[in-house]
Image (cartoon, rainbow, N blue to C red; front, side):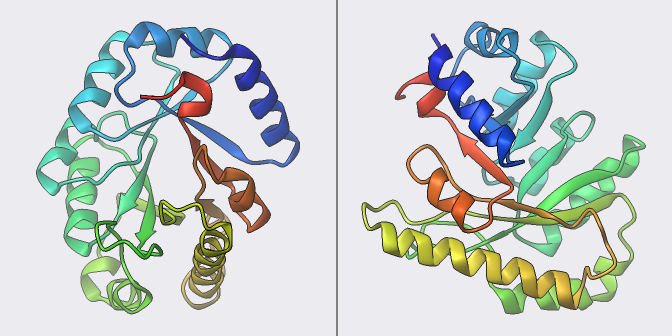
Length: 221
């Protein structure tokens, strides 16, 4: 069951700030997503490919599906026909496979580059040098069916708000540098996906354009 009051308030607040809300619906059954859909939500984020593909089959087709979890190259084919945005591109190998599968589906797939901004080693993501090497590579410039529109990052899981803010600031700095160095003339390179239920207000203050919220809408796992 969703928290309708919480959803309405969050949605209205974000709308005023021109921030996109991705409802993180991982592990939640389709009927719960439908409840939020009926309240007006159209963008849902899933961590696992199979779960997202199953929900896509059963839920309304005007839903915009965002893959927000770590994505393995061999799983891209299952979502390439319908995914709206992949947040978690962390290698050239993955980007090449997304391009290949997008081409098969006669689509261009929007992507975000995921950066490792947290202290935890367990988090996935590029560093700035890796991203630079990828973006200047010959292989990258051959890709025609992907469209990089911004960056994504996950802050450390900590109560230290100053540390979280510093990590979000780092992602905004990375975004600004990429924009200047690689995407200066690309108007749709404008998205910064950062912030979840516990820290999205800080993320917005630091420049987030997309927030990924789950437990505030759906309750704890």
